[in-house]
Length: 102
Image (cartoon, rainbow, N blue to C red; front, side, top):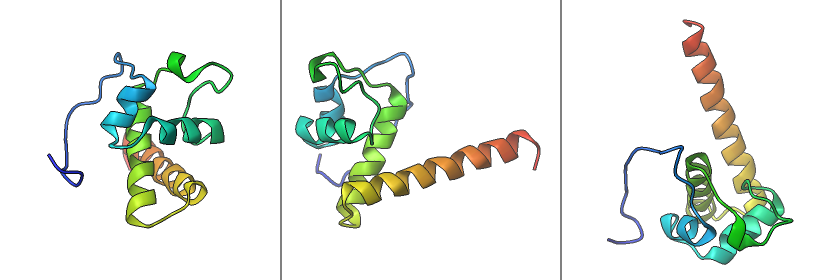
C-alpha cells in the first residue's frame, strides 16, 4: 500500500488508539500527533504523558483531515486546524438541518 492509497471503513467509538496507533493510521510520526495535541488541534491531555493518551474514532477522522490539509495544501498547522474546524462545523450544521427535516 502506498502513502496515497485511500482506505475506507467504519469508525468504532468503543476503540481507542494510542499515539503510535493514531500516527500509524494517519501515516505520520508520533511526534506530529504530540505536537498537534500540545497545540490544542487534537484532543488529548497535555498534562499527562503521551503514553497515556487515548484517541477515539472522531480524533482519528480529525487527525486524518489535518494531515491531508497540511500535506495537500502545504498549510501550516494553525491554518489546517481552522480548515478542519470549519469542515466539522459544516457537517454539524448539515446534520442539524437534516434532523429538522430541511
